[in-house]
Amino acid sequence: MGKYRAIPEGFMTIGKVAQKIGVTVRTLQYYDKERLFTPFAKSEGGRRLYTDRDLVMLSQLHRDIS
Image (cartoon, rainbow, N blue to C red; front, top):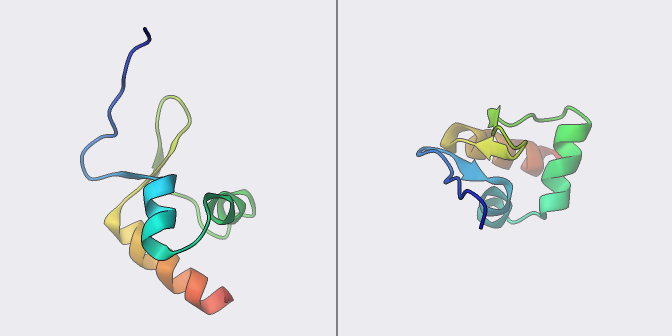
């Protein structure tokens, strides 16, 4: 069994952020790819990590784009 690495406290995964703001994971991946919004950090394994501040900014961005 591989090592389990917990998400650091104060960070959320892309799935949790997508759920909270009502968009798909693919939408957030697109925002990152097109450099519309880059997450605060990435884990050693490359997972996008978001903060509460990111959540607010993404909500505003998504509202402006929609």
